[in-house]
Amino acid sequence: MKLNFSKLKILLIGDFMIDHYLFGSSTRVSPEAPIPVVNFEEEKFVPGGAGNVAMNLKSFGTNVSCAGYIGDDSWGEILLNILKENEIDTRFIDIKSNYTTICKQRIYSESIQQSRLDYEFLVSDWVPPKEIDYENFDIIILSDYNKGIFSKDWFNVENIPVILDPKICNPHIFNYSKIITPNLKELSEITNSKISDINSLEKAANQLIDQYQIEHVVITKGDAGISLVSKNKNSKHFDAYKVENPDVTGAGDTVISAIACIYAETGNIENSVKIANAAAAVAVQNKGTHKINIHDIEKLLNTI
Image (tube, rainbow, N blue to C red; front, top):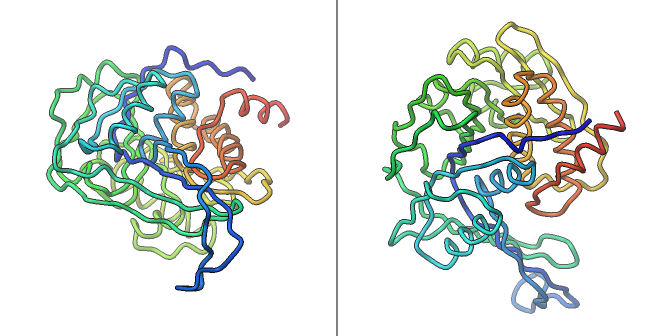
């Protein structure tokens, strides 16, 4: 199967952050606490949150424009430069003064994550400083990490498909979403229900479909695969591909990116989820936040 999304124009609105990875090795335990002393060897910066979605979309060959905010600081500058170097449109990213860009610092020793330090200073009143013409895009992705991007009720769009990756229930964006992609924990919390089997999963998904007129709910389930529940009460469950020692960091970002691309091109939600399931398998083979290559997905799909 050949995939080509070079003509797709996607608007990505979400919480942008930077992932800072510190790698080293350890030969001793700290005398100050029962933790390893990591000798620094190298570091890398990778766009996180909505930034990881943007990188995935670009690796699929799409034309992606980003809307959100970052700080007027070194982390924000690094993030913006990475996006621009990858030919991602950043004109709708608001650079806020007196604000720290969200950063997740992870320390690895011998390929094992030892700790994570988060820098989070959330904004509660953000709205886009520039007018966005939604009609210029084929599909809109809302990447909500509950970091402030949708704290105010400002999003309003008609006639353009919207796909939402929710962290919590923000009714003002649920109401405009055609597809949502929660994981099991998020689905349980959003619907205030206990999910223990397929029946309870489908009941929770249908609750959202009925309440917000959503057309499709795609539930990511880690090593249990992905489930699709649609407004016609039909459901489809896809087993996960077998991956040794998976790292699920950013896997949800990969899923929503793949679904958005396939659905915008074909309008076929079942095929979209099938390919997204393959994309997730490729993503979790790699350590940390990782953008995947469209050719890797093609290879995996050709083995089906």
